[in-house]
Image (cartoon, rainbow, N blue to C red; front, side):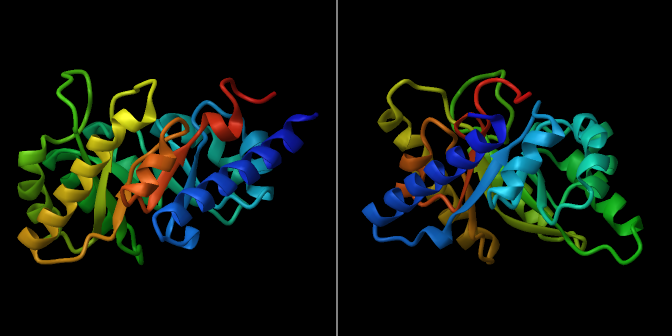
Length: 235
């Protein structure tokens, strides 16, 4: 089977799993956005996934997406930055992505706002707060107890649209053991909604190995790479 056909089959299987997970908890699959994590993947693989119906893609690095973007400029798709956002890359990210899903500090948020303000006619840039849901020093994300303070600052920016929260839980062999982390993010979102007085509809959580559990816990966006593109870049 060629790579293009394999990606098509993979997208269909993931969609079927999303449908089944949503039904188990009385949800509809159209409430859930599938984001294909296309980091390290060549433009041809991303194009194949687009042909299979995928319309949202996530990239980890600003520089990598800058290199691939010209070959994919004709695609009607939404591009997400899901990797850690460095302050010195924030201005470039503001012009390259439709959504920055990994804001975890005030400094890069300021730079996103400033850059978006300088873009004539630009719409609001959607952002998510990345929350560190486990105690690992090498993990990015704002501490849960600091999320409200960051959220209050973000909603003051006229060129940014705070839409919700994102997390990357620990990689555990048993997906059921990740459930408490997803539940914690949902509960934090609910608490933050009350604190800042605005709806935060997006919960971006769940990847290839655990997205079904995330859906059961309320995920509205799941970020799937390996289950779509395979463990290595397609040739």
